[in-house]
Amino acid sequence: MTVSPDEGRSVPSGEPKLERSIGPWQMALYGLGSMLGAGIYGLIGKAAGQVGNAVWLAFLVAFVAALLTGLSYASLGSRYPRAGGAAYIAHRAFSWPLLSFTVGLALVCSGLTSVATQSRVFAANLATLLGWESLPLSVLALGFLLVLAAIVFRGIKESMWVNVVCTLVEATGLIIVIAVGVSYWGSVDYMETPQVPGADTQWLLVLQGAILTFFAFIGYEDTLNVAEEVKDPGRNVPLGIILAMTAAAIIYVAVAITAVSVVPWPELAEAPGPITEVVHRAAPLLPPILFTAITLFAVANTALVNYVTASRLLFGMARQGLLPRALSKVHLERRTPHVAILTLLIIVVPLALAGTISDLAAATVLLLLTIFAVANAALIVLKRRPGEPKGRFEVPTIVPVLGLITCFVLVAVRVTTGDLKAPAVAGALLIGIVALYAILRPEAVPAEEMPEPEA
Image (cartoon, rainbow, N blue to C red):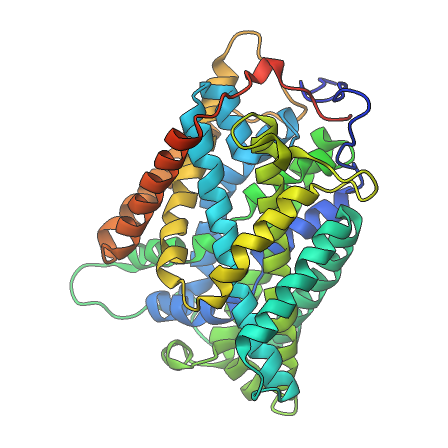
């Protein structure tokens, strides 16, 4: 058995450390909760509009494409189980502080954008569910953020248990959809796609649908950032990522088959709530408010995972010397990065109260794909570096190579097929991060000199 380079060492005594308390099933559910979300409820309709009844195949192709980068992250998590995620990986592979700083802050921006967006979605759904339409959404969103920050501060154990509950509720909602519609299976041609004049374009449509559904499987960075708090990370981080992606693929494919079996795909594409429409036709006695309640859990879970991830990113970057040292402090009793958690709250509250940040959200998707490309490239470099210790989960070099190519293709497709607003915002964000780097002038600690986490 090979021991990863980040196992078996500890940070200097006297300093509180993050607590290793996450087991294999919690790790898998954390990853699954990061992938499942309220977005899938609308994604099915959009994908059906592109691919028709073959939407299930688009999810399957997307799973294979996403799994390439997922396996790279599983290998990286096995080698380097520590907070900081891709920022630390980039630092170790390329020793270029500006790249590590840019990768880390871009990921933090993505997390903050998600938390701010989900807080408003949660507030809107809660107001609908409880009849609180008279209350300003900003008040409910602020209350949600304060509760969220309190949970993340309280401890990783508490955050994980909330995640487990929310993930199980999310999964149960999708399983209900499958259960009420399974009797309709076999009623349609599952390879039927929209008719397009000209040559046979079936596989082209499936690939387009796969690009759309690819984002339903990303969650690798979230799992990598809590690796320092996982028991036996060399085994459990890869296991968690692979189990989560496989479970998500099975659920998505089954939901897709159910949806087009119950509702003809042209109607599914036009439905304002595709999954709600499926349940309404297959089981009209089920109250629609049930899925409003489930959406609350899905939205809360997405925000929770992103908050935890962003706090560990700030913590890890501070320990690398890329951000002020205070952000790397760990609370003596709670064993959480409390300064980082509070800093995020101070930043995310005005973002949430500002209202729509959809342009920023679209831009961070592009940045995420670029960061996934960096992570794949880093694994290639680290695998080829003489003397670099291996982890307990290794993949052939062809895996990160194909993952790198897939990410570049997806970036190219997103830039060339959409408007220029998202790339422009992404570019502006990168310029702002580089400017901040020039102002801070951080002195990064060499990777080999950084204190290692507790085994």
